[in-house]
Amino acid sequence: MTEAEILELTYFDKAAISGQTEYKKPNGATGFKSGIKAENVKCAVSKKDVNNVNQTGTTNNIQYNVIMFCPPDTPIIAGDDVEITFQSGLKRKYEAGEFFPYPSHLEVSLLRKDKA
Figure 1 (cartoon, helix red, strand yellow):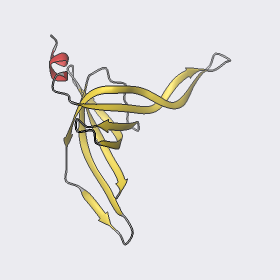
Figure 2: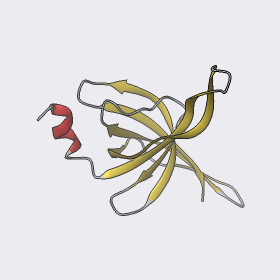
Figure 3: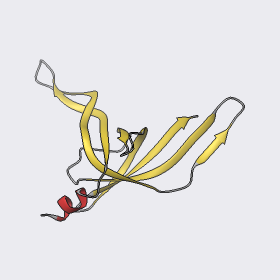
C-alpha cells in the first residue's frame, strides 16, 4: 500500500468540485465551460481558524478558513467551488484557494463565505 492509499483510509468526508472544464468546440478549438470536475472525492477537513461572524441588523456574514486533505491526483485549482459532505451528512460550500502538493496528498485552503 502506498502512503497516499494509507492516508485515504483516514478520509471520511466527500467533496464535489466544480469549476472550469475543458471541451472541444465544433471547429476543433479548445473552450472552457463551468461544470463538475470531480465528485465523491474522499477527503478530510480541518478547521484552520476561528469563525468570523459579522452581524448586521438583518444578516450574519460567516467567513472562515479550513484545510481540506485529499488525494494527490484531485483535479482542483484556486477559485474552484467545493461542496463538502461531512460524515454526518452536513453539507457546506467553500471556495478553493491554492493547494500545496505533497507526494501523498494535497492540502487545499478553503474559504467559507455564507450568510446566516
